[in-house]
Length: 181
Image 1 (tube, rainbow, N blue to C red):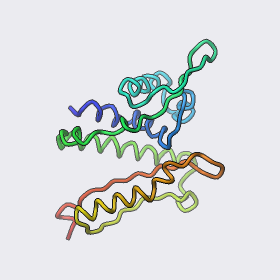
Image 2: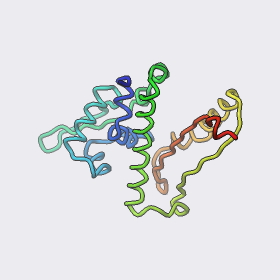
Image 3: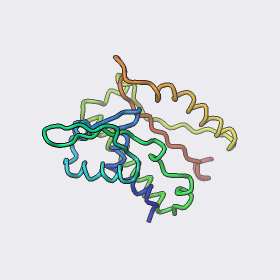
Image 4: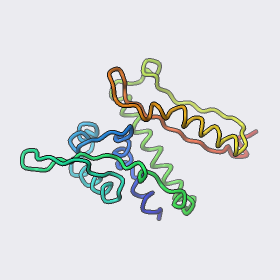
């Protein structure tokens, strides 16, 4: 069985909820219901509670709305990833299951994009591609740091007129010997 953080974060619906908060967003359950219209409310409430209990989401505000309490949540980014120690302790099957959950979430995101009228990747400045390159471990560390520096200003940017929320997904894998030739 995978570690509790991996189980918590790599569940397909909880992963979608976490993604909804990317970009320093603060959202209520009502906001999430408007974004995740295919999720039954009771299921959404259960998954939010699991993320709060796990320390991934925290309540930033509460207000009374028609006799109930509406909570506003934010992502605790420092708790929204699997630690290096947890990753190191995962078996190959646990990594496979975690990656499958990640890819399933990515496929579902793309399907929702298409269902919402997407599909013109040029118009939407969207895409998916793969590139192969050769680098030492030290060079790869430099590449990853450069990518992080390049996108950090936009990750930290606030919503503004003309800005559309976007999700950047990365997967970095070493090529297997069969694919290197």
